[in-house]
Image 1: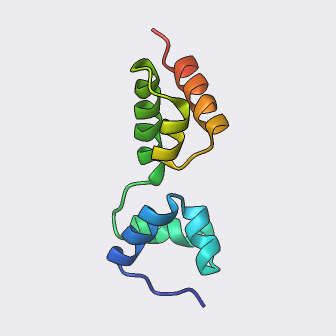
Image 2: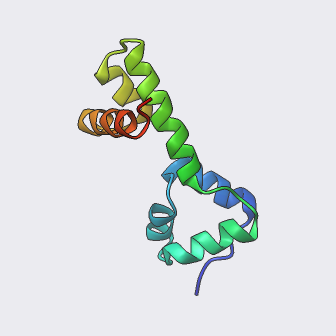
Amino acid sequence: MCPNLSKEELLELQKLFFSDAKIASKLGVSRQYIGSLRKKYDMPSTKTNIKSRNKSISFEFTCRNNVRRISKKYKLSESHIYKIKRNYEKNNEP
């Protein structure tokens, strides 16, 4: 059966794993179950955090920060950083 998680436990798991799918995989439950707990506790989706993170990554490029430094800061591969930058710029053109 599914584990009973408190709101605080779910918040900690979100900080560690960032997505409902990763949390679910670690706990051996479905992604939908984690999503329903998030809704039950009135917690925001991690996608909101990802959008904010991507905006920050794109901004760091404008400040001419090193890709390797950015990838270490956000714990993402360098290729993922470039992909985020490219997608963010494409979707947020003036």
